[in-house]
Image (tube, helix red, strand yellow):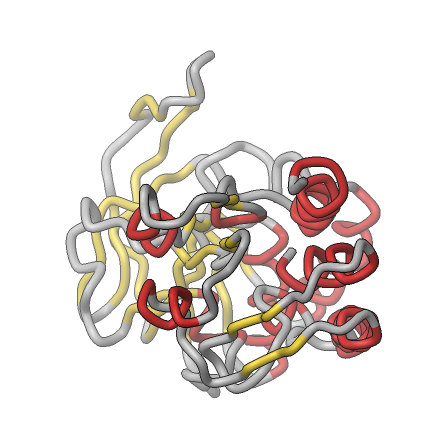
Length: 265
């Protein structure tokens, strides 16, 4: 979202300054291109960077955007596109144990699991693609999903591509179960049925599933602390992309375009 906004503002004659706290651009796409055969997704953010710089954007890596740093530029407007981070619910007992990780840690390479028995919680596309990366590392993966279908809401074309690959590596699926707790030896799950409000209703007794490691794929939450810090301190403040509301890449880039072309005057 940030690079798209920078490009479009440049096309309008604005001077865009992009502050990136990491040593590389790309945001969530830096994770999306890590599963097997997804490397070419990286072309998209390289393309965005090329276009943004073509229209005059300055990109500063390893630069955290604090209120003080932002104020030093005396900006006409500030666009916050700080993205989102993986959810790690504190309500789940054992979530902070050393054998518990998020999909972000696996996809980024911060944590490498090999030849382990892994319980992966959540079967959205991020979870399934993380599972694909894990099985490539020789891990035996069991996917736990609270719904009664795998990856609910996902395009069937994606499932037709990835599920056979997971099946070929012996991936196990436990549907209609929720995660109750985590311990050093695995997880405790409970059979459930989702009611009309998609709330889990118990259908039996909880039981233990052995696992060396647990990977959580339970969605993402907006990272918007900077936006809150800037409220009332800058005249024209806009929050876009996952920092405003977690969604798909198309949603983020569309919002970035709208803010850059139609909202900022």
